[in-house]
Length: 89
Image 1: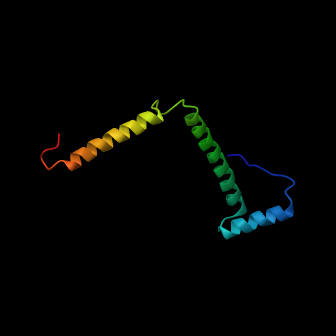
Image 2: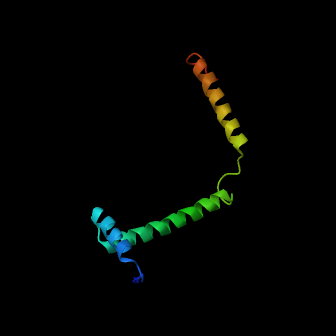
């Protein structure tokens, strides 16, 4: 593992960060590590979402295809539920 150092942090900012860490029952180092880790994870999540929005992955179905399939399935279900038991087609 490597060590990171941040220079020229104003004391009031350091004190506020230490207070937040204390409220969470963490050391300042652990709290800052969690912040950095969360930021990296968010960036990874954004990259995944961008891949899906670019339609490089996922379905090729249009919204109309999905709506049509749902309507067809629902009408079949309703037709089956309206039929007496044993007469479903």
